[in-house]
Length: 126
Image (cartoon, rainbow, N blue to C red; front, top):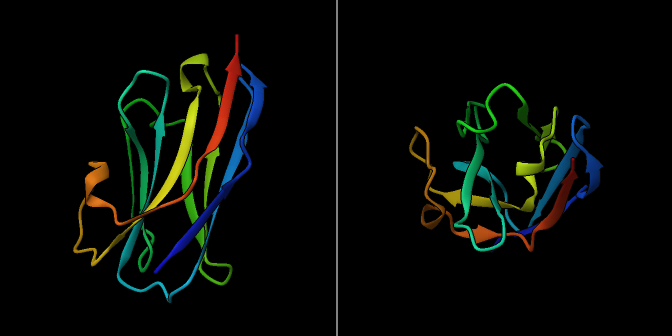
């Protein structure tokens, strides 16, 4: 089992930055990918970013490319999402998730992930 705890959300103004954290516990990470998703009211869960735990290879959703950066700290078992140049349309609950048995490539479908955190709210005012 894997437990994921997100933190770092909050209320900011357009153009500001935030850094989200996803702390993982419960098992040793080896062949996994960690993703960030977000969900706004009455919208489907949207892929934001993904990182391969072993090699650090990253992927991004089109709406955040060039503004968001995903990274990991292996020693702390933590994944980060640095969000810059925030826009009101970035407002959502942000979730981190783990895909076990990662075999390469991008996994943008939330159903491909096995474990989820409880989410953290990000609100961007105009």
